[in-house]
Image (tube, rainbow, N blue to C red; front, side, top):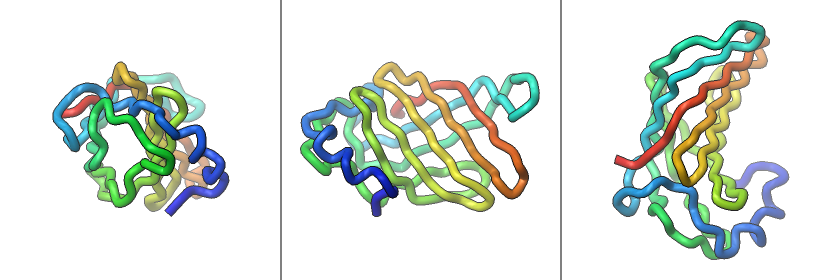
Length: 134
């Protein structure tokens, strides 16, 4: 399944190196977020964590259309299937889980941003942290 508007990304993915921090091939990616910023409020300390269950291998070079399907994100509130996108050396995972829309992005060094948009609550939240393989 592809996200709307991502079909044109396939040519850009040809031979793009994955931004998965070093670790064993196909290892889960664990993310920890030290900062939480609620829309309209001051940022605060956070201990939020999530895990990506993925077939991605660190340092893998992608062929056109080489992003995996069927990967999942696991949080303390549940599990959801993710869609991937790549831009240069960075990766982004997207998923929909009630009650909102979610995006996680990280670079080869592990710097990560996770945002959740909760339209029904009129709220968005941004987390700042790191991701790495086990």
